[in-house]
Image 1: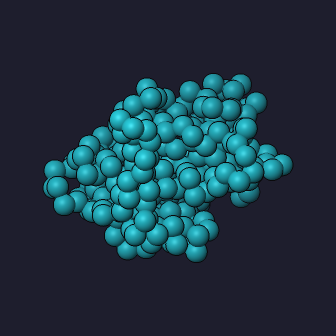
Image 2 (image 1 turned 180 degrees about the vertical axis):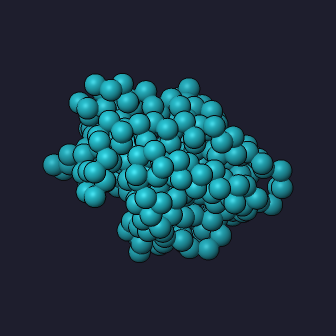
Image 3 (image 1 turned 135 degrees about the vertical axis):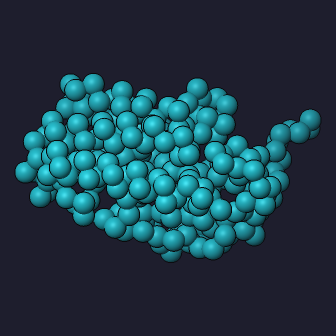
Amino acid sequence: MFLMYVDESGDCGLVDSPTEYFILSGLVIHESKWYDTLGLIRAFRHRVKNQFGMGMRDEFHASRMISRPGDLVRIKRHHRLTIIRNFADLLGSIPEIDIINVVVDKRGKPETYNVFEVAWKTLIQRLENTILRRNFSGSGDPNEKAMLFPDQTDVKKLTSLVRKMRRYNPVPDRTEVGTGYRNLMLTTVVEDPNFRDSAHSYFIQAVDLTAYLLYQHLKPSAYVRKKSGQNYFLKLESNLCKVASSKDPMGIVRL
């Protein structure tokens, strides 16, 4: 069983939106590696607690760490950026993690373009395809399944989408006579999405970091650019699911 934790960066809005991109990142790990990976993240958090005073229960939310730290304002800003960099180093050192990234460039999209639905369908389809082709780390069983663990998002909308994809999931299919569609119903994703509060999940906090770093890689804030933080995303290169898109050297699915 593969577990995919999902978080976003940016928003789904097309009109008067403050963000140019909507990003979904999925951190995929096999159940057999879950405990070991959790242990590595907990050990990292212990080191952060001892070095910087960030408690084990303090929520790691990458964008807020920089711009709206709340109680974490007690930690100097450059130290908060160091924590972000060190967390990226840790994730990049864990070979059992695979990361799927979907980027919607909202510029020029018509108002009818459903950013939420298109991004989520694309992410879930890439998860399914990669499992069926046995391209994830630790994949060997042809009958592997997956479960979704998103951050708290539009629960009703996403649950309905996943259920629909099990019955009707038209995917473009190029043929000699043109472009048609095949109904590739989901077969690997079991159960409804299992929503998680990021404050209580180290894995959601980890995928929050990956989505944030990708956004900053594409459009860094002034502070991040000043500190060369736009390059931190590259620390995750060995984890990127590059088979998700043959059109991008880092496997980013760009829409």
